[in-house]
Image (cartoon, rainbow, N blue to C red; front, side, top):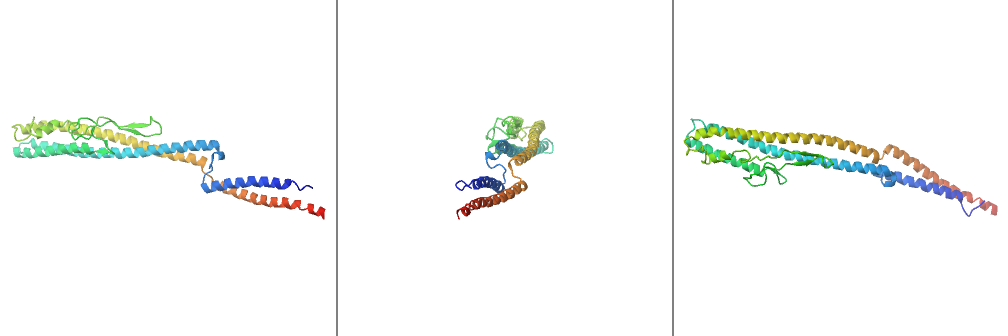
Length: 293
């Protein structure tokens, strides 16, 4: 019998050390809720799960982009709806000014109303913006002569995943082709005021200008509405996609508590048994003392 090197104790200690490591790993998984806490737990699984996490984050940002885009388009649509109401009123005013029952003084009052309404159209076009982005005209000048630029919405994780709005929206007096009406209301060419003998006829002649403006307005609103429908559809699809991606990541990264709890209990019992085995291995060596008595 040899006592200088306790092989039985060393073997039991080695096994117990490994079991304690397994027990610590199991406890870490139960504590964090993750099956993969470090790369060594599952190197390939970690790489896949990290890629899925990045993809889910990208899709999540695209969803936020889409929701912001819907808000932007709704702002533009509501503003154009109000402008459309003003155009309806303008047509009513011209019809009133174009009938024989309206006096010259009455046409002067109507002309003032028309001027104010046209100024309001310009004001709406100037003020309608989202985060400083002009939606109904180019630039912030109240009499802007340019159209709003095309809007590009990033709706996916790749550069080519974009949705664009129609360009050319210029929902101010100039863009709607109503500059002539504004001049006529001010007593200039084609005047509808009392300074023109043919004021009523001039008012009737301007009705087509308003009809054309309404057609333009409806076209712009339709374009914004179609873009909004497209974005809302994309958001619904992206939401479903993100859910599925997160589910796939969870399968790889998250711990199964039922399985891991069973494993923890198993390792805990083995660890206790290993501790007892070490103590018994040390006790066996004491038998040598009987030979020395």
